[in-house]
Image (cartoon, rainbow, N blue to C red):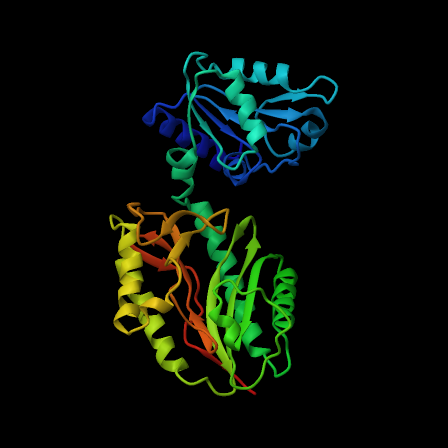
Length: 367
């Protein structure tokens, strides 16, 4: 097995011991990618990975086993459409050695409900919870391999966004810019994870759907985009404008940038996630724009673009070394423009390290 995956399974078993967990059950999901680098075909046919203190193996439809064997050397318990999964599921449970009386089990919260109910029906009386203190706990603390992949994805994203701002011309649509970015990713071996391009007043909608709005002189331009490279995503928001900046843009940009800096300073191992949110929010509130900061300060990022930890006003998560998350305060002025600046950071050596190397200064594109 891949040494990284061997380490991850060992770490999971250590967490299982610490949390008194008898069995972890994972469906086709990013959790399965993390533990086995396997993303099997997902449909109504039950697929799951079970991990106990002494065993790990897959329940898998027989028609998918040969393909899946190319990616893992963990054992399979196959089942056919003709016979159904019941016998294979029982054989897998037997192999795990899970206690049959009131075991403590962890279920993948992203698993199909019918898959989860198969497990619960087979283990009556099981005490179940989700993955927050086992797989989720481990995933929120990135290892060296994940750091390298995240860094590479963000450096590529820097190049794509820089090129996109340089290509802005009057009459381009938001969709034109998104297509330009997507083509850049593709030419460099990545895929588009998401891409939000907002011209002028559209930037005041934090989750604007990129559309056919045409760029004109004096428009603010918000680009929030990310690629997926070697299994891991990037995420970044930068601002610019075409020709001359709209009235008030420079002052708002300065406030938001200072909010980013305050959050970066607060992001330390041992701090609460809510401390980071408060640091950014206090700067924006002091400048008189508190009601215009419409969302949380950040979200975790790893295999998924949104995962733990979440940087919110109410989060009691204690930040630790290796955690990766966004810092993305914003000010949204309806009918004028929205301004958000986003960095993805990792806590390393006691401080927040930014993955991107692209400056946050607003980009002036020629009209």
